[in-house]
Length: 513
Image 1: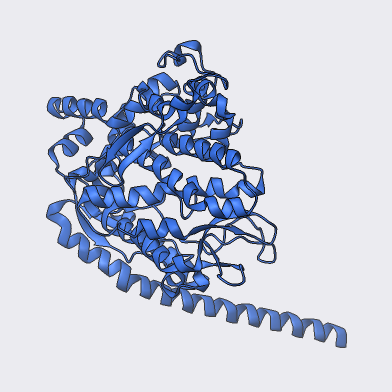
Image 2 (image 1 turned 45 degrees about the horizontal axis):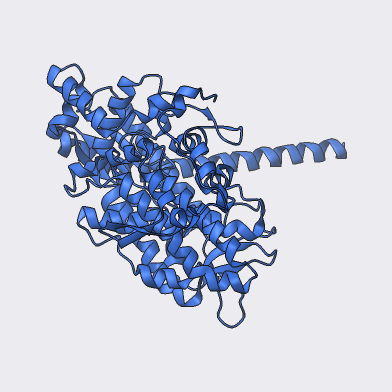
């Protein structure tokens, strides 16, 4: 996507010091502190603070971290602004924790500091392209995110693409000028954010920003838990950080992993994610408000969000809420009216939260849910009415919509190929690398399953009737359907066997006579 000169006018770029400048120490020394409710005092340098002071970053003050959750948990008014600063801070803490291990592996101090600073910039800017209300509207069925040419030339959609394009086209000159004396270019930041590091010894840097143990999750679990007033997302951050290490694979790939002493705190961390998903991110009322707001956004952006970066970053929660207020008061949009007045359909049915153990049972679970949805929508077809029936199931790729705890990364095409653990553990005396599932029964039990929930909403006056219908579908009629299908399958197999026998007998008779 081409960006004209007007799209760079949001930033005035001051002159940057050179390597020989006396201002270098002042620019990169951590002379400033932000007081944060989760991490206490967060130190940062002048160059980082100058990024935070830009208009495009300050926009994040008006993008709620948890979308519509503030309508359920009244404290959940926190924004992407604080989260982004928190992630930058934790990226630095992770690097500090890894220093001795990296130095032992041959990484020198200058290179370590360059990597640390580059990753901190990536952490600070990883959410710079979020749309209003964060993950609301990211489901592809709303069509809000159109395909854009990403920084590597490939076409993709989603807020991550906007983030990378904003970094390249709006903040790129700034990063090059102010971090150039440290030999950091905007391309280095983008390489981390797109996860395209080619050096197998730098794989761990990608993991720090986007992996099973990344700084993003470290921050949002604690932050979201704090602001929602719940305990589900809490874990021992200090122990977690001190347990992080570099895990070298047999092919000498350096992954971010844990020492064996960190298995129990990793259990805390992973189950914090699991509990926050079920109790907060997939809360029944939050999900119906997400549906209303997504549908409203689709109604005012029928072609999707603006492709022009400047027009896109002018959108924020406040601007959308003003539109909702006007449309609700004027009675011109039912989605806006129901959202504003907090009038919504009620939950009539909810399924269990995850799939079964083996692949055959997992497929049966999927077939079960698909069959129930089809039968329900035959009786109650989807309507463009916020107070009608609604079937909700997490199908998106957003971090807080659908989670799967993997045993291995999905890079090897076959099991016989070399596979990297998704969460590697380094054994104490042998330095052998194994998946965490080999050391943790609780994590093994929930691994490699899609943690998902099916909900069906109904007009309030029909909740009991709808609930009875759904329970009958889910627990009685599907069992009968499966029984009938099994009988049909057996009859078909018997018929096939009879036909095969008849063919064989006919062939034998022909050969004989």
